[in-house]
Image (cartoon, rainbow, N blue to C red; front, side, top):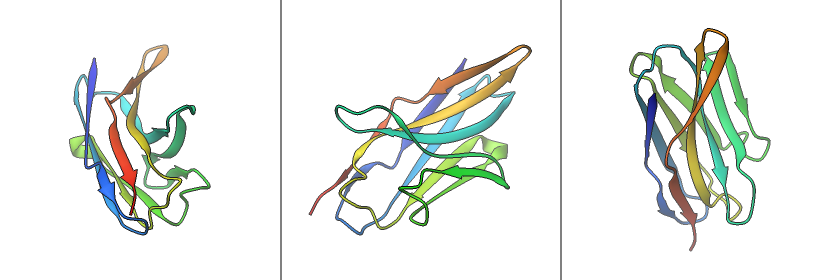
Length: 119
């Protein structure tokens, strides 16, 4: 099993910044991709950003240019730098990891961290 622990959420004013962190532990061998998703009340969980390698990074259109995902592969940690936070960004942000095993891909989720944008 893989455990994902997020940190860094909180309350920020519109236009402000937050940095989320997620550390993977447990059976981390085989993790090849990590990322962030978010879920607002009453809505589905949507992709925010994922990183598989330095050249394989994906962002949702709504965060492109404002959010930056990065990772420390040695420590299986992924970060999400969120700048210019807007009223549409509040949600619970979930860390995600994909682990490759023989014949299958396992998906893991963190417990989520709340991001609130309010003046």
